[in-house]
Image (tube, rainbow, N blue to C red):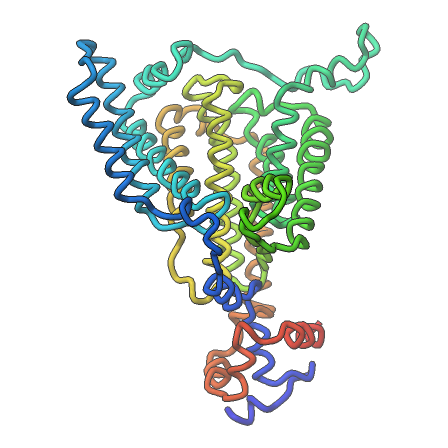
Length: 462
C-alpha cells in the first residue's frame, strides 16, 4: 500500500495529494476557531454583554410581587386566562434569553438570536397545540388575535385575461397594472434577504425556478397559484426574484470584501464616529462565504436536496396555511411569520452549512432542528385540516412531467456517485487510511494548510 501511496495517477497526483484534495472543506474552520479564541473585548461594551442573572431575577420577582400583592384582581375569567398564558410565554422567553447558549451570530447582540430560538420554540409548541384541534376550533382560536378572522377568504385568480396589451380596453396595460400589487415589492425584498441567508447564486436560482414550477403544479388546488405565463417568468422569476437575487449577490460581495476592524465606541474621539460605530453594531461581526459544493459527495448531494425540499415546503406552507385557516394574505400574522422565518432561517442555514462542511461538527444545530420541526408541523396541520384539497390528483401532463423529472434526477445521481465515482467519498478506504497515517500527509490534511497548494492540486485534476 505504501507503493500505492507513492504511485502517481495519470494526472500526476499521488495518494497523499488525492486525500488532501478530497478532505478539504469549503471553509477553514480551524482558523475560524482561532479567530474567536483570540477575540479581545476592550471593555467598552462589557456591561451590555454580561448575563445580569441576579438583576434579571430581581426584576422578574418584582413583577410577580406586583401582580400578586399590588394590582387589583379582575373577575373576568377569559381575560385572566389570556393574560396568564401571555405571562407564561414571557416568563419562558425571559428565562431563555438569559440561559440558552449563544447561537452562530453575535451581532447586534447574542441575546437577539437567543430570543429568536426561544420564540421559535414557542411557535412550534403553538403549532403542536393547533395540530390537536379540528379546523373549526383552530379558526376560532385565531380570533383571539383578531376578531375579524375566521371568515372565508374570497378566491383571487391571477390568471384570467393574460394579454399584455389589451386593444379592447381604455388602458391597454391594465392586466399588468392589476398584477402590480403589494406582493411585488414583498417578493423583491424577500429574495434579496433570502440571498443573504443562502449566500449562493445557484441555490437561490434553483429555488426561484422550482417554486414557479410548483405554482404551475398546484394551481388546481389553490386558485391564487394560477397566474399568466408572463406573471410567472417575467414579473416573478426575472424581475422580482432575479433582481432581488442580483442585488443580494452584490451585497454579499460587499460584505465579503469589507474589512472587519472593530474599535470600542469610547475610544473614538468624535461623536460622528461614535454614531457610525453604533450603526455598525447592526452589521455582521465577521463574514463567512458559503460554498455548498452540492456534488462533492453523495451525502452532500442528498443533504442539499433535503435543504431545497424543506425550503420549498416552507414557501408552500405560507399559502396553504392562510388558505386553510382563513387568514388574508395582507394580514399582519402572515407578514410576521415571513419576517420571523427570515431570522430563523439565517441562523439555521449557518448551522446547516457548518454541519455539512465542518468535519468536527457532529451535532445538528438547535435552530436548524427547531425550524425543520416547525415546517413539518405546519405541513401536517395543512394535511389534517384540508386533506381533500391537498390530495387532489395532479393533472396528467403535470404528473408525467414530475415522473420524468424525478427519473432523471435518480439516473443522474446513480451515474454521478455509483458509476463515474468522481467524488471524495469514493476514495478507497485503504488509501485514505494510509493517507491518515502518513507523516507528510498530516500537513496536507490540516485545515490550516495553504490554500494555494489545494488550488494547485485542483487545477492538476481538471
